[in-house]
View (cartoon, rainbow, N blue to C red):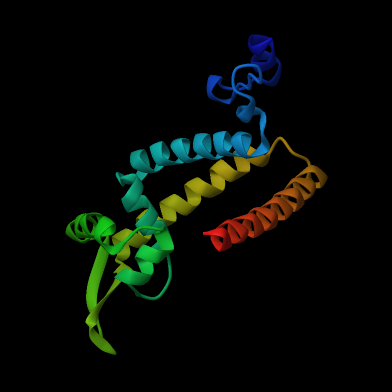
Length: 171
């Protein structure tokens, strides 16, 4: 049955659901995590090939984007890591001249980071790659299916946010 399910749906082995062995894999959250992980792994391979960036460096370049300079603390919050975790990646990006650091003119105790021209080119390659991957992923859906899917994802995201808030309140 598992082989038949995979063949019928043309799913990769990572996405095969076998409810008898692991019922949790049949749950929506598990299926979405499998999809997200497959997409993430493919994206990281593409961006490594196109830009030579590691996963942490890619996250930093993507987060800095075409925005004004931001503090290292704010950048760490944006990527969900602490300042210490991103310092080595930032140092590598500065050494490769993809990121520039400067003291904040309003508070010289704070360091601001921004993309250089080369960093912007890497960012633009990431965006173009993301747009292509998104197009390829969604081209199998007609406009009505896409609208319905995105509406469902928005509703599920709102519910998941409420569930997270409730868990945080419980401690």
